[in-house]
Amino acid sequence: MKSGSQLFNGIDIGGQQLMNRIVLPPLTRSRATDDGMPTPLMEEYYRQRAGAGLVISEGTVITPQASAYARVPGLYSAEQVAAWRPVVRAAHHEGAVVYAQLWHVGRQSHSSVQPDALPPLAPSPVRITGYQYRSATGRIPYETPRELTVAEIAGIVEAYGTAARNAISAGFDGIELHAANGYLIDQFLNDGSNHRTDNYGGSIANRTRFLHEVIQEIARHLPMERIGVRLSPSSDWMDAHDSDKLTLYSTVIRQLNGLNLAYLHLVEPEIAGSTTVDRPADSIPTEKLAALFDGVVIVTGGHDQASAERLLADGTADLVGFGRLFIANPDLPHRFRTQAPLEPLRLSGIYGGGPEGYTDYPSLATSNT
Ligand code: PHB
Image 1 (cartoon, rainbow, N blue to C red):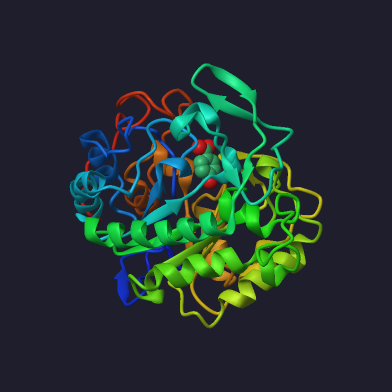
Image 2 (cartoon, protein in one colour; image 1 turned 45 degrees about the vertical axis):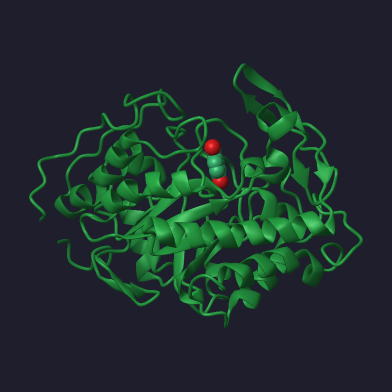
């Protein structure tokens, strides 16, 4: 091991010991069945990447309405729970801790993939502009979502709890709440997408109410110390705009302090969903936000081994996620440890298809060094 390296130090999260500080972050790969069932191919994919200290599943939807895309897995039926079990077992096989990311896309969905072809649901009827929906037949404009009623919000909160309970039943050690990237929870947080005049809109205290109701509901089914929260405070991807992101996300993070969560997972400012862009003008340095949190911090977005070591050394992060590097290098921890060369990412096969671009990246002979 390189002297001064911290990536291979252990760390405790939620009462579990991780073997390193390397995270497989949530990555949508669209290899589930059309009804959201995990597949043997997914089992192979996670087994290949099980050398991470923490494996976080791809975004997994809590209800059929929560999905934007075909072949995204779910955690809302008994059949899905059963189909997840071998996948979660494979992810565990080298000693990783394995969390499920729970996902609801809100207005990022489209009637073409919604049950009964109804419009997507969101805090307010505010359409995404400046981006296009990735439909089965190409890019098309987003639709104006329908505003959720208070009763429907309560139903979604309950569905998060059920999905969390299902995750534990499937063998996951904990869950990560996807509150980033302009999806449903983030749509409640940002005043650009939340125009509500009831208890869920207006003040920051009201816009964070949905997030807290979801956390409290999930905590009925598993300990707080097994719940992580993912935020992308600087991203304006998918029209995620707030008039004062610094105040909003500083408040969100301070509110999370004291809950005894597993971790806070921060997406770097130059990440727009799945790609790297220029930092938005109102972006907030990650170290500034990380310093506000009193627990474990994961940072993900565009990092390599050297920059990850710097994040660990300067105290910004406790763990670092490597998305694109992990897609192309299933044995990434082994390669980091041995200073082996890295395989480049191929764009074909990122979303959907079969093994090509998914499970056909080579692992070097594993000697467990
Ligand atoms: C994607 O499918 O590109 C994607 C999914 C979830 C995210 C970001 C990007 O949070």
